[in-house]
Image 1: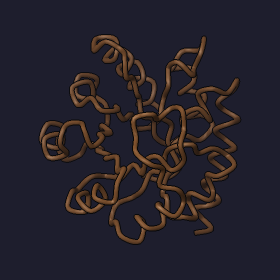
Image 2 (image 1 turned 45 degrees about the vertical axis):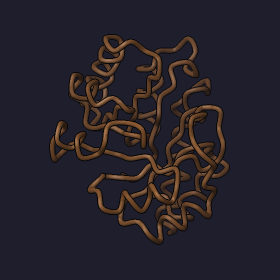
Image 3 (image 1 turned 60 degrees about the horizontal axis):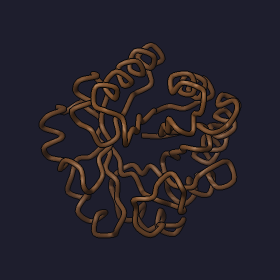
Length: 209
């Protein structure tokens, strides 16, 4: 997992469809998309996931489903992102198979230590900074937290939480392999140029590291 990672927020998309925002963000440089729907009924969640999967497959961009292994299976998504209170990694892997992408959120140092024994594809370090889009998390890691985890963990790190064009490079320099954003792309008038700027920032920082 490397580069610019988009986590969707249907509310922040406003009058635009999630598909429209995702398409323009991918054209701007997003390399992975996570569909996050906290309050959508299962049928509608699956239908949304299927539409995005169809859109992203031709662009060779993986679709990750937040929390819901059942939705990922039903929609033929490329993987799932699970939190500490979601389905255990071992069961998710058994259900999704060896080739699925499985990311795991880490919110405490204990989470990081436990993840070291798991063959997850990446760790979602969350949140880096406090943000209105992630209200169910513990204290912010800060940039120092990324550095500490990078020195310990064997997994790629996806940083999320309050990241934008002003601090994305710092997150990468601290040790993140990928920068995940929500409002920085979902809430802007035109996601494509915004994504292009973020992609260039992240790409440059990765090459400098």
